[in-house]
Amino acid sequence: MAYIGREPQIGNFQVCDAISVVNGQAAYTMQVSSVNVSPETANHMIVSLNGIIQAPGSSYTVSGSTITFASNLVTGDVIDFIHILGSVLDLGVPSDNTVSLAKLTATGTKDATTFLRGDNTFAEAGGGQWEYISSSTISAGTSAVDFTTLSTDYEDFLFTLQNVHQATDGQRLYGRVFTGTGGSQAVDTGSNYGYSVTSMTTGHSTEGNNATDHMRFSYINGADTTESFNAEIILYNPHGTTYQKFFRSIGMGVSSANASHSHDVGAKYGQTTAVTGVRFYSQSGNLDDGKISLYGRKNN
Image (cartoon, rainbow, N blue to C red):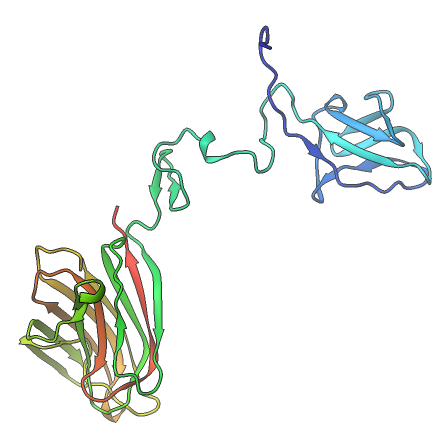
């Protein structure tokens, strides 16, 4: 049936927590989920005492979060319930768990992968920020660490190397890429790589190669039990098929004879083929400790 005039709106209906009667006491504090609540007026409540609905104003009054009955309650009296109606002619605060995505006027795709921006539009989460994808913990005798899934959901990738330790002294960390997908995915072992390494130890040194079968991602690393290296390696736009693929490695480690060193490496895969994975391995010997984690970055 249609309303004549203004249609009543839904209020914030709440049921107060149970209240234990105290012998000889008339005033009680009203709470919802252990938090004090204050009805708009006594007329915005339904109160049942001993199975009888009470008349607002004459049977009880309200001041803030306190309800006061017209006479003291005694042992055996039961406050059955206090139902707060809210402001029934005003929307007020919506009841808990009642606002769905469909009720919002914001534009854009509303789902679990988006967030609401200040301009009232939904945008994909993670734009421009690194999101954790996976990690690989290195154990003794590891010949290579492979990341064979570079999702097209991400534009760039970051590899973080934490306390990577090589079994053989005086070796560098090498890298190659995977191309192809599914059963045709394979490591490219051809002379399609290049790199330029700048390192700082007791002095300044550089090394480079523009046509080799691997990339270098570190300077010379020591193999004593306390020697390791750490780095961040970024792979830019591996899914593109117009340009060659580029890596940037910045790190710090310990070389032979316990000499600290830092390095800044630019490396490339000199093909326009899409890169679908990355392999990390030691120049000679195995990797035997550390952790490599993979992150992805989406650009809006």
